[in-house]
Image 1 (tube, rainbow, N blue to C red):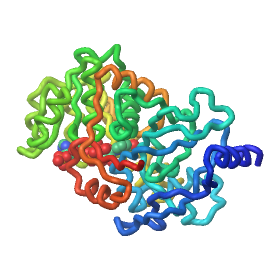
Image 2 (image 1 turned 90 degrees about the vertical axis):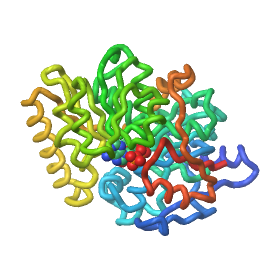
Image 3 (image 1 turned 120 degrees about the vertical axis):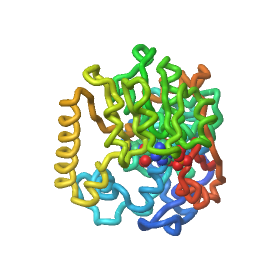
Length: 375
Ligand code: NDP
């Protein structure tokens, strides 16, 4: 009660009006774009734990995950994460605020927050079980937040965190890559022109890797401009054919999925520690379809079978996942401010145009990121 009371009091003191509600785009049920609703009366976020901060949102980046979540993807797992003891009734996640990227300013710090102060400019990737950034304010754990790169506007900064922390988690935590061991490594990125791809190309080039990318022919100039060394057009015929003629790879990041697993692992250098990491996993889908317990069992069985089968062929098969991380964003900020990574904003929308932003996202064929300017 004391913490809550303090927060409310501070909100009163830092503003002349009582902030108990705020503008936001919410969904009240899962569905298509019709489910999106603008309200001026969304609940104002509250600091519940002493390590939390409230961020005033200046810009919100959108991701394919937002479109999937709008349709109910991952609902079983994410609801369990929000309510581990399963106390609340089904549907208690509504009204749900989407938006996984935020750039903004710290408005309020919990009592244990040491690294941030009010008015600090910050960026963050918001875990999908938390309320998102299509709102005037959002509450986050301080360890999910990082100081924003000085060289970027808020709009540019909101284009990076979710795809960057996903690429970081896949390439660094799962793939074992770092700035010290990438020189001359041959990396293949399947799907280089979207959010994750455009970030991963730049990060790997900054670390000295040789980067091959698959994309549509009309994106070749674009991905080369980001540093890709070799580009293969996946629309010109079976993409595995030109890829098979190339020197084998040390690591593959798969942003495409589908039938790629059938041939991609044969492109790796066998018995060298080479890894295939796919971001397209049935993890949340299994839970939605089978329930948490059976879904977990099915997921564990699937990944173990695939990993063992490929291990016998001398290559490593892994799943990659988004992982929120302020410390990873701190390192990424250094690379951005050093001019090694730039934000790739394909299109921006006003706060009033969130449904149009979702329409754009749903059409696919991304060339970088879609960002909503909140204030
Ligand atoms: P985007 O929508 O931004 O980009 C996808 C890109 O892939 C587009 O540029 C598209 O362009 C291109 N593309 C589509 N089909 C192919 C193909 N067959 N070969 C090569 N390129 C292709 O998505 P993100 O980069 O943000 O994410 C990539 C994937 O990773 C998504 O499926 C996303 O859901 C998933 N993801 C998973 C996460 C996890 O935790 N596991 C976290 C983040 C993302 P075009 O169609 O014009 O070729």
